[in-house]
Length: 409
Image (cartoon, rainbow, N blue to C red; front, side):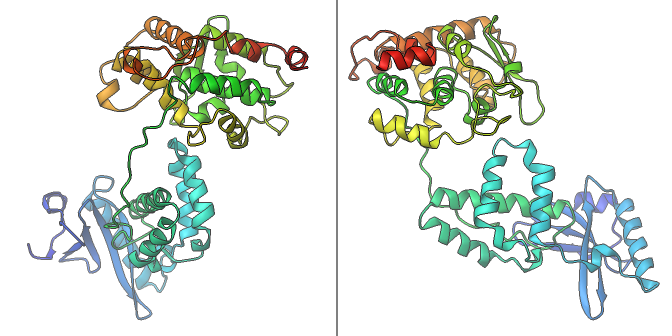
């Protein structure tokens, strides 16, 4: 295809994507107006040599702008330049810091992993903030990936994935031109983590929880174990989201969708009813800040897992444990997908109309197995080592603090 044609909407739509790199279809009438085509996108651009240096700006992506709308913007810029005025978008070089701020403002709030993104930007990319986006190369990202990969290969992969997304958004937002520097970087191999609490381990966890002095941390971990909720969802639980009379927890969703409703097992309701409230604090699991929630559970979890002799178990493995125990006990994949609020079509498609009653019954059965079963939960673990049946270990967790201290004395 010739690269100089009258750039119409029809031509833009019919132009094929390239398999690698980028290609420009330049307008035959308006100098500097062109369509930039990559493997994944088509965007209208305008470029002009100013003070001996070629400047280029993205007018907008095809589909957001029509060819006629993009042409009008290009004509307007050309008119400004002819009068001796350099348009701001052609004059200013965008920095990584500007992109990071826009990303956190516009895109991150819609993600469940926004907290992780902020940590990557703060811990590994803060030194990049003054750098112009156009100066960041694939070599820079490869070096970052290699340096992080020496001690944390999975974190290195997450950092590059974040940068890839940020540069794609920068292209869409007209902040950046050229090939995405994160494209083509090969990730380190990752093995899907399969760790969960085995039948002989869960009783030890409940026993270790009895010795945990922070009552809100104790209750938060039990909530995670018996509901399978995500860590941040547990930490941000508010009293207004709970109806303990009906034993229901409405979990707000980060992306503004309908709340995810979880029926609470009887054992957990009793535990939550015993938790003290702090005046003016809306959160269930109170932290060190007067009106804030529990933030850092790592220290408490370290104490618990050392006592329970499960030092390789992470906090997120509690969520996996919940799902595995439900599955091993014969609950349906659709029910498990809904209670864990999975978005995968393989587990949730077609089941959005499930009622709470079967979920409540499943959670009641599961919580009794996890708390009282002594490891006897179902055929999937029939050959596993089991512990003897014990009295309800949550009784001490639901008792007032004064009674706990008295019993310990």
